Image (cartoon, rainbow over all chains, first blue to last red; front, side, top):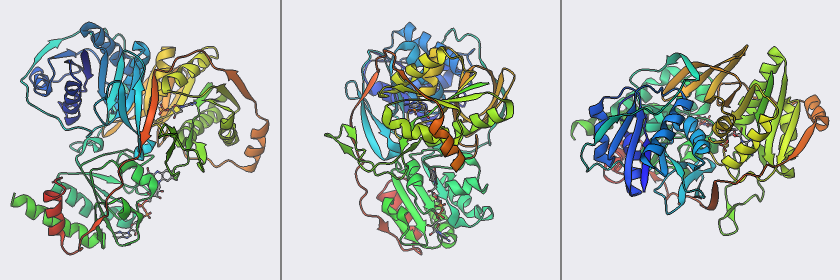
Length: 312
Length: 246
Ligand SMILES: Cc1cc2nc3c(=O)[nH]c(=O)nc-3n(C[C@H](O)[C@H](O)[C@H](O)COP(=O)(O)OP(=O)(O)OC[C@H]3O[C@@H](n4cnc5c(N)ncnc54)[C@H](O)[C@@H]3O)c2cc1C
Ligand SMILES: Nc1ncnc2c1ncn2[C@@H]1O[C@H](COP(=O)(O)O)[C@@H](O)[C@H]1O
């Protein structure tokens, strides 16, 4: 068996790349990674530590063009004789994996949360309210893995990196502008998230949320009304209609815990809820609860985290 | 401009999720179906806005059975001109997408709009599959869309930000938040929807590539541990020693 893994490496080797290589390794057989863009050869070679035996890099293909990426990955799969292709279930996979499925006539399972059991893969469905077990009926298979579903496992040694021509062809998408806030942790990849809702009363009060996030090294998120009224940027909105996340720790302050909000965060390993109302529905989904005023509790928690960090 | 909007039904967002027949089927008992929010709020409404600004037609298309006609009429009430239902059980995304692609191929649309995902299967698959089958560009998770001549200008989500890009039409665009504001159908729209054309066409012969075998529910959370609001050192210690997340 031979497995091909696509990773995005334009911002270096992220945790999701280590996760997908580890996942492919656990499936058994040889693992080849294919990527595009400008990552340094030495950085790509470190994927060997997670189980890759080789990395193919096509520097002519743009990450912004799903058609180029589809052709490149199909060429790579053909070159190494891969029957399974693995993606991390991110925005690139959502644009590319469906195309590749049609091109390779390979059954696609998106949002996998565990290593396949034979031809059957466990996925998240109903916005995290249930799991499905999907059988892939075709010999060729494509799986996209939800972030934070497995832990990266290092152990091997660096592998070879080869320049590769994936016959990407012409780009169909012309990028005119990119707006990306610098230095922030991308929300879907964050292991720790501090989130706040309408209970914070106004955008001027987010300083305490940011202070806690900084102390923890966490990303910040918010509920939908908060993004809708413009207190926080839209990309922070989590839930049914926003981003779905599954960090190790989700701290929610001043959020009631509506079912549509929970749909985006119920995959979190540990949930801490801070709310003045002991009847807030969020407590039913929480592991640790604090009935109290966010304006007192958050700064106190920040101090406790700082004390903990300085003594560890 | 000829616009095609792919409309899927989904259970109301507050539905209780349960399974029947040895956990092999979604239990529809007491479940209200709605138009999948991304398809309705964003794809359909933006298509209507484009038509209102530049002329053309908005056709909606659903792969489903006669029970889906209620959801289709709801989308017509919001303002689509006509509906097509491909008469088949949408067994998987590939099957669904190939049916829509077959229909779109012979009807020459300038833009095909889908939602970013269905909120029951959360696959984000159908749009990209239609695009590959038609060999046209696919822009995924768009939050803004404008068309001028044969060029679509699209704002898309990228990891932690947004990107503005241009693409030639015909193209498939999957629509996310930001694209338009929800429209509530009015009485006139609901009346008009009853007489708008809903054409039922037979399914093409396509094999599904995947099958949902069983489902299960996540383990129930154990009771929430309450912490004294003045003792945040205890919380930090629990997060470190017990939960092991910091
Ligand atoms: C189809 C659909 C999709 C939706 N999608 C989403 C989604 O993706 N994401 C999402 O978040 N919502 C979504 N919603 C909205 C959702 O139903 C809720 O309305 C929303 O999540 C409520 O936001 P909130 O908890 O910030 O505000 P509220 O419900 O107003 O809750 C505020 C909470 O703060 C508490 N509070 C007040 N003061 C303080 C204080 N000083 N300290 C601590 N606590 C305090 C209150 O007790 C209350 O529990 C959706 C709704 C629909 C119908
Ligand atoms: N049965 C269907 N009929 C028509 N369109 C559909 C159907 N299922 C999904 N779609 C469209 O494809 C989008 C993505 O669906 P999915 O790939 O299931 O997440 C939806 O938002 C709809 O626009």
